[in-house]
Length: 268
Image (cartoon, rainbow, N blue to C red; front, top):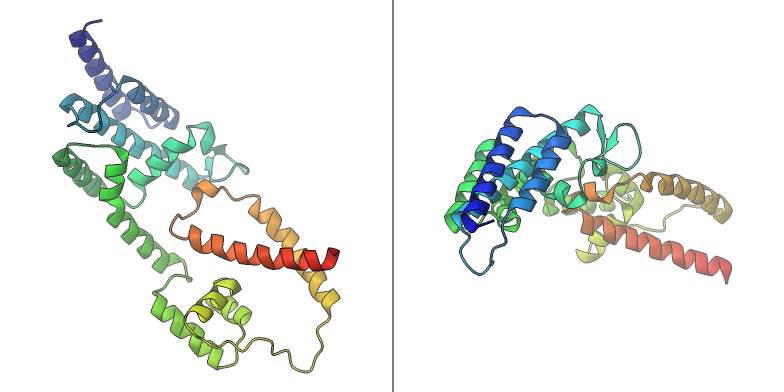
């Protein structure tokens, strides 16, 4: 096949995909179109300007990924696609691979049609519509969307200065870290970490005159941990908010270290 014939073949396949996407709401068909576009895209040298024909294919790839993200999110909201590997509905992994799902979410979550079109135009102006560039262009939009979502639906989000004021005020009225955590909707480890970093004195260790029964405490703790372990087994890490993962990971690390120390003391 000559170069011109190959170019004509790619153009025809690209037109087929555009028609395909305009006529279908089937998430499997959109996932298939995304794979097809990957196959027809010619290789390019990343250190040289991207040819116009490849820009057209890349734009269709980004729009296909956005459509895929839109349909998967709609299926999750309707209960026909589940967010984890268990539960009712199909797993998103049955539709396409983790890599394409990630970029589908990047192109869709919190991004309006106008904002996406503006990102495409900016990418064309810069001579590239690669995923990483589109992600960089869309990042301010997505960060703003996540913040607004947390303000409206997640009572744990607030600016750091306000969070520190809350912890300091509650600590001054005699509340311990776990009580503060429960009242604020965050983890006790996070409360203690913030207090240590910002020199907030926590009234820890105040148990009054009632002695602590270690057997009762350990029995209740192990029962709670069994439930936590079962719940954690249902988590699909691909669906976690990447901005909050470092905080959760640090909290888990602190908790695991405490549990390991207790286990070591019990079994020595």
